[in-house]
Length: 496
Image (cartoon, rainbow, N blue to C red; front, side, top):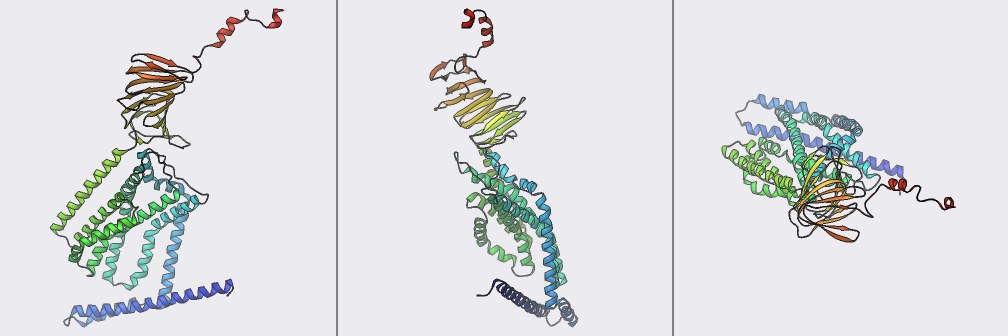
């Protein structure tokens, strides 16, 4: 068995031989392609072509040929420049990693706030956050350095292209980058947020999702890159038609097979759910038809593409309306002033905006000038006054910790239970005004009746009546009694 140092040298030598062999094959391939291009172009010109064009072509091919050492040196320099650019962008991104993560969490926040769930990402180990930040900064660095890397690749391959082919590539490269960015923007603002909302929504009540930072970064990276590549489809189709590799008629003939392949690709690059798969497949079908139209513009093609785009927009609008109105069990109708929310198992209070849906288990708190009105799917409306804190356990159980609420119930078969610091209230229909304090809770039956449970006893509260609930009796000013009793009650020593 070879020592470790000799084994390393041996493997390095084998790797060097493989690189040399690949470069030799590349040199042979470059030579063969050049000769085939000359031969093909001479046959296309026919016998009536002047001899000077063939000589110019041969001279051009001769000029672009490079020696093996020149190829290796050129490749080494371009790779080094690209690596240095990515490392530089990575270092810059590392200083702004928190801001980049906060920006990347946009779809996650959108989906979680719509479902009334906490927006924090979790880590399951000490090193998971570090590795997730490394991956996030690397992905961002590659994205930022992408134009420079493409520029270096262009300089390496341009030596093997004719001037006409160089013009095509120079036109396609910036358009390709714009298409890649468009795919990422489509995923960030449409596919990823609504896809996450769908995946969270199918869990149902009683299930608390735990989304880790590592899984979320990997998920967003996979979908963003996949959509960026998918949006290159029209350019690839145009390029294939320009070089006469595939004619536009072939694309039309292969349409049904392309649709099948599109759904298979969408199923591979997206999570295993039909919603995200369809949301990815529809743009791919539109892009495929757009590629056919670019390769061969026709009136029929414009009409067919318009129909597909119209149907796609209609489907997207329907899905948007369904998801935006689906929400959680609790819907915030109106609010003024400062309103804060504490999510289940949360630690810090967060500010919320109006027209937001929540799931059960949240706690809402209003500030000194804050007021809000909420509605649940069970037909219960709750109005919260200033300096009020309410905990929504489930659709039919509410805990009023402090403050004042006005609660209205249309009709429920199972009575609504309202817990206060001084007792429990039950009601099936009607309207109650509840003022909860430390030692007393004042309940007023504005409309309908209610049942009050206090110290094991149940009392009936009729419409238009008010009752003060207190545990251990109502509070009194003991100081006045002590002052009144002075001089009447004396200590035993004083009586003697």
